[in-house]
Every structure is written in C-alpha cells, then in structure tokens.
Image (cartoon, rainbow, N blue to C red; front, side, top):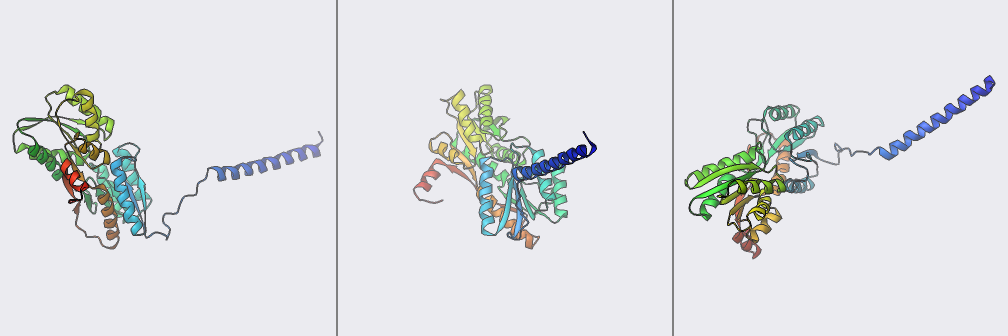
Length: 329
C-alpha cells in the first residue's frame, strides 16, 4: 500500500473511531445518567432527613407518613433513608452521609455507643439540628427527643398484666433487638412494675430481630422450652402478630395472656378476634409529625424542651369497640 493510501486509511479509521466513541458516550449518558433533583433548591424552605431503623418496617412507614404530612404543610423537602434490614452500623453510615450532605435537620432513632454520640457532635458542630425519635440517647448532644416514654410504656404493660390476671404468672418476653435502647427501657419499666406484686415471674427474653417471623420463632421456642408460660409480652411492633402465629403452631389451645406493642391494623384485628388481649399504643404518625415541626422550630431558636413525649396508653378490645361505636377516642 502506498504511503498516501496508508495515511488516508488510518486517518479515516481514526475519524470513524472518534465518531463511534463520541456516539457511545452520548448514548451511555442518555441511557444511564439520571438527573438528581437539586434538594437545596429555593423551592423548599428546608431540607430534612428522616433516618429510619429499617426501610420497609410498617412502624417506621407510619413515622414517615406523619413527617411527610408536616413537611407538606410547611414547604419542607424530607428524605426518608434507611437500611434494608435493621443494622446500627448501616444507620450510622447514613447519619454520617446526611451530615456530609449538609441537610438542615436530621431525625434519627438513637443508637447506644460512642460512635453515635460523636456523629451527633459532628453534625451539631456543622450547624445541623439533630433530634431523636422512638429511642433517645440522653448522653448525646441531640437537640430534642420526640417520642414514647419507653420506661413508662413498659410499666403500662406490667399494669395491664397485673389488672387482668390472678395468681402466679410466668412471662416470656419477645423483644425486637437486645441492643436497642428503647426495648431495654420497656423491659426495665415492665420489670419494675410487676415486681410490686411478687406473683409475676419473667422466665426468659428472646429476640425477634423486629420481624414477624422472628417473633413467631421466638414465641415457639419460649413455649417449647417453658411450657409453664402463661403470659407473652412483645416489646416491638411486629412481636404481637408473630407471637400469635408461634402460639397457634405449638399450643393453639393454651390460654395465654398476650400483650403486644403498637397499633398496627393487624394487631388491632387480632385484638378484636380475642387472639391478643391488649397492646401498648404509641402513635408513630404523631412522632413523625411533631419531629418535623420541632426541626422547623430549631431553625429559628435553639432552646426547646429536651424531651417531648407523645401519648402512650393501653388498648384492649372494649376500647376498640367503644371507638367503633363513636364513644371516646
């Protein structure tokens, strides 16, 4: 091949390669690039983050609903972020990420340990308002806690058992996570209350990992190992539902007093069916709603009441029937 022909061949090949390469880049950009919304846009007054314990947990979705309602009323952009499965390390990484994103405020479940305390300090130093909900960490610099008084909630569970049983009672406890502060406080409140009578005995505590199937397995194991159990107490939202399944599997005819936590629709249905005797009602939508409003206040002033408890009460079948008939709450 002549030198001129060789030069022309390589030149044309190079041009074709460049055209193909540029075309590929344009195609790839249009195919795979997703334009992210500029959340710092002046369309919103503030940008807040709600960091949940677990992404698709019904309880946390109710907190999100309340937070979104308050956000919509106040022109707030709020991000809901959470690990797929409950995991403190993942939740703390999300906290760090939201601090780095320089959001205006963060709502998060308190996590025991120095890492949480240090991250809250980091966020506060950068001018980010951080509040806890559901679980508090008083040793941190969080601005406010909004949520249930968990020790008192545990006392209410103990009160329900004392008022609705007679004689010696043997209690199996199913708890969401051993390392969750709110679960520990509920159990501590429960123990304090039942200790007053001397007739309530706690047999064992098992973990559900805040899943329905985990609660079912925990209840099954408790009843298999301790057939003398007369009471089951669940300390997190899905425990009551799971405990009923576990009881149905191993001892469907046993007359066991069951007290659960939260007012998920399925829990309330099981109360009306006489499969759960009572539940400790806390109001996650109210927690989310009030948390956003607290963060809005914190943008204007720093000093607020440090602990803002939401309502907690015992709900039994007669309460649901009364509400259905329009009598009371």
